[in-house]
Length: 439
Ligand SMILES: NC(=O)c1ccc[n+]([C@@H]2O[C@H](COP(=O)([O-])OP(=O)(O)OC[C@H]3O[C@@H](n4cnc5c(N)ncnc54)[C@H](O)[C@@H]3O)[C@@H](O)[C@H]2O)c1
Ligand SMILES: N[C@H](CO)Cc1c[nH]c[nH+]1
Ligand SMILES: [Zn+2]
Image 1 (cartoon, rainbow, N blue to C red):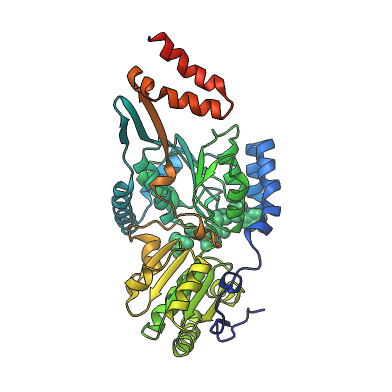
Image 2 (spheres, rainbow, N blue to C red; image 1 turned 90 degrees about the vertical axis):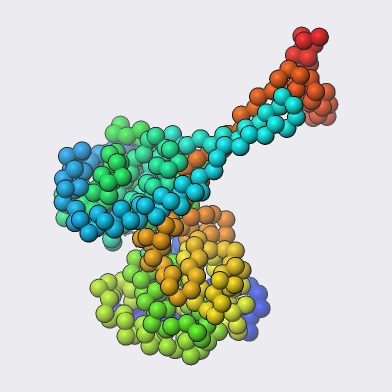
């Protein structure tokens, strides 16, 4: 049965509402919390049985049993040689732009002399070993290799492992374009593993692979749930689950652009969310007409129809752009486009979004591939507390404290006083012992 195509997007009228937007905005019926029930036993099985459990889960969910988890150097090289030169050029452009952003964003070591001879340095150190996840269920997301790997490399991470689902048509290997992108970036530790089992493999380690300190990358609802479950065993970047696009648009927006951008992200997953927030009934009608025209022309029409007809997608009617901004901030979309008069001023008022795309000529698709921004972004409202992937995810801050004897003598009495106030006199004694020795 075909999913409902009622005016393409259902309408939610919030024009009379003045608060409570967080509960009113569209959300998927199945969320990360629900998916945990499927994911926890998979992760536990990988923790307990190692590589065999990863291969079993691959057979069950990806329909193919890989010969082995680690992809051989020969298979990576074969994929590199088979890559279309035009795709290679596009990969290189994407790498160059993202690298420029990452290099500028990398924080430097800061040294502060808080008193004479009293030095506190904030040293930036890279994570030592990270696991990058690249989706491959519905589409081989070669661009996600770039979005994960470039910030890790700019941060100086010495150990990088990457996992992507085994593909039936490639004999249980990840998609060859993904392998070719790995070759281009010099990543040689690649595993044919997808979903929760891949993340558990990276987090716990198996007889085939060493565990990592951090797992990054996007994926479907099961990948997002696995990240929530494994957080603590490893660090994660954010819960970057099924794609979302919200567009704040007024009567000045071009309905054909708005519709094509909604469709572009609905193309990812039947669970993808596409939300138009507008104060213009005329625009809402015109976007529906454009969706009706454009959706049947799309290659992944069924997936798009399902996403647009789902409870997670809607047109939200608002009184004016000010209310639109409030609704957008309450929704905290992964991607937020602003297609209004004076879009930069409206964008300045956005505080919750994974990434913001300003004006008619910055579609989300640009950011997906080659804007120089990162496309691994928090979903399901997590943009209220989490950030998109960047070099910052791949480094730690470490304070390094160096005091001379005179500098310790200077502040020592205060340390002793505070230690006494906390009823921890041995703390104070560790300082007094030094001060008495030097007298
Ligand atoms: N937020 C972001 O930054 C971002 C970026 C790119 C893509 N995405 C999202 O990534 C997702 C890619 O999804 P995908 O499915 O194509 O690839 P995927 O690689 O994320 O997921 C495929 C894996 O899902 C697992 N799986 C499938 N059905 C399962 C089930 N019933 N129970 C347990 N595990 C199951 C399988 O192990 C399979 O290997 C899309 O939702 C897309 O919107 C998000
Ligand atoms: N829109 C996705 C982020 O949600 C990223 C992507 C990769 N390829 C195409 N799009
Ligand atoms: Zn996309």
